[in-house]
Length: 622
Image (cartoon, rainbow, N blue to C red):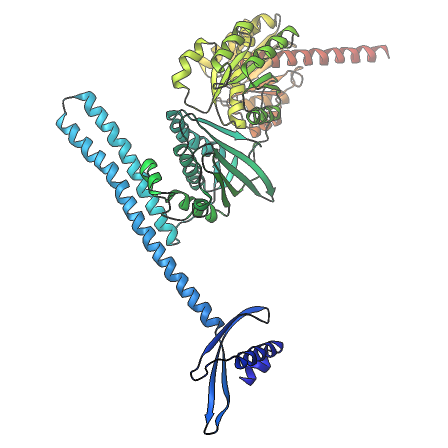
């Protein structure tokens, strides 16, 4: 005891004072007794000691005491750990018993439907509508049962540390769209407004586990729809938090105005087998595994998950996840014309996100937050003689909806602009009425650069088609002659027809050898240009071009030779130029592109000829 006390320094003094005070009390020391002190600090740690007093008795009376001091801190801590472990084991046992009861109920419910509907179908085998109805319900119940089994298997894998996370390239737009396609019908069934909002432009190609991302979002969104009453609202918000080296951190927020959760349940909402109450389980179903699996998946993916909720007011789940990206996004020119675009949506975040993407695609964009304002802006734009080319309109808006907004805009503008409906829902049920209102096409929400680009490309094609139809009247190349070198009869006919519509005289050759012969035999200045196919029998386009350029014909160097080929890659263009060609046209042939290129070619040739003549005139005067 002395060694112990000496090793504890000042603590020994306080302990001895306590022992002295104890001895001075009127205490019966006939038997050993103990004192527990919990407020002793020793080396910065609260420690517990057991102190025993043993009286030493002699014939003459008490002679003194033996004091035994033992440090019980570790023993008490071990006892506490064992006690906690026992309580946890008991709690787990109770939770698993409750879980088995829930699972038994959940499995039996769809199984009862499957067995019952199969029995009815067999009994009504000749009643086709009834059999179809039974098969539909069997299919629905089977999918529910499969989802339950998958949850149980996932939980088992997580507990055994056998669940793995992939690190593969995937299209983020496709991953989110697949989630929306699954959740939107569920929300629509309950008349719940479902929106997806992107506050930033997200990289198109990410590296991670797309399947597990989908599982996380579907679990949370399905719960949000499940626990939100009819007429409520569920929203998925995606933010880009930050980028560090080749990693982007995304935040997914799921908000609803459903039944919410109590503060007590929020503390255990991610624990396995937990549900708010037996009443909740009986009303809404489920096993209490979904959010536990979700939390484990998020942690395995290197992220975090949190929840804020208030009973009766709804819940907000926030998931933050890291993803890799390759820095190899497509930065090639988008090939779009510049359009004046109006975006109409009652959610300002959706409008700003769409405008951000459209501006990066080179478009002139504005937005309106309701249909009335949109109609007003279209009218003002027309009156100022700067009309819109295309209008994106959300289908579901307060005030006047997308259909009525489209109808009013179409009445103002006629066919002078394109109207595209935006919707997170399947537009098949509304397509007929939308078309009648003047809608040209549809685009799915949420927006991505590729989907908006595709929508604008359709606009561009319509503009190009209208221009192309008018092209024969816009271009007149009377007096120009072209040598058309093409081995395919149908392609030769198409090109020849295009040229004749712009009043171009055409000679044809079936291969490079015939083309070289015709050129060699032609007088000076006979051909204003040569359209040269590449892949041909006998002699290909490259060889024919080299022979023409190397010849002694007066036009060998100056005659424009244009590649006209299905070889459309950058290296093919380089090969054409290296062979001595002046330009490159890709098949399938675009009439407008041919006319524009011929116009530039003929103007360039006339300028060159004029310069040559001026040079010759100047030389003679000298």
